Amino acid sequence: MDTTTTNTVRIGVIGVGRIGRMHAALLARQVPGASLSVVTDALEDAARGVADDLGVPVAADVDELLAADDVDAVAICSSTDTHADLIVAAARAGKAIFCEKPVSLDLAEVDRALAAVEEAGVPFQIGFNRRFDPSHAAVAAAVADGTIGVPQLVRISSRDPAPPPLGYVRVSGGIFLDMTIHDFDMARFVTRREVEEVFAAGEVLVDPDVGDAGDVDTAVVMLRHEDGCLTTIDNSRQAVYGYDQRVEVFGSAGMAASENPLANTTIVRTETGTHAATLPYFYLDRYIPSYLREWEAFVAAVSSGRTPPVTTKDARAPLVIGLAAWRSLREGRPVAVEEIEAG
Image (tube, rainbow, N blue to C red; front, side, top):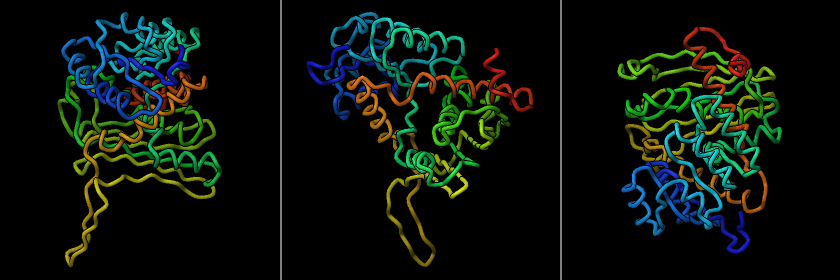
């Protein structure tokens, strides 16, 4: 890819549903060193609406987008079941690749797609945006620079304000592969230690229809890392007070934790007590800065020829942990990650 003429990474977006529209708007308006070249979607009207709003052309299909001379990189934001094939096609076309998580719900498909990336030698970044949240990143930095010593215990709370649509639940791979997968990545990110064993428990405590769809809506997962560090993750599909995302690492020399930002910083104190704003209710209200930072990191890596910061290994490992969590829940026992690797 040649970004030397314009000093700009020109990006085509594949899939302009909710997350794709957000990425397209950021690339068109807010990411230094990047430009939005073209969009495409299986639904032509959706693509046309985003394209008209952002002032870019629409590609008739993925093949046309990948063949375009003014596309240096692609953002794969389509449904999960399309990701693997699109990664392979983009790699063969020599395009740098940003892909929303997960690559696939099937480990063999993940390996097929990532092998194509490695063979082509193109830059690749998976979309674990929470790594780029300033608060979470500061926790990881306190571990990396030795401030809190050797990590011993990690606590991650991840609670959504409301369950997703049932149509999404039925195809998402379930709570461990569409929600907790972010937390599995965060556990690896803040500790810099791989996971060896997984134990999961889950219940349907929010919406019986979630259980009918084969999922759970409330879960706790314990991870044992390679050095013995223990991570506990708690998940709920319904936190009535807002979008709740917290990370804490306790180590031999101290602890570091990220707390939730409030919707605003106003505090009212009266004789009845102290009152503060609620939490953000929607994930975009919380994490837009992290999406911007992940794009800035990707663009900087592509422009300079460096490896992007969230790699093929990072795309694969959380899925393996998620598959181990599902096996643990179904079989009621701890599951070693190597069991999933063995098939």
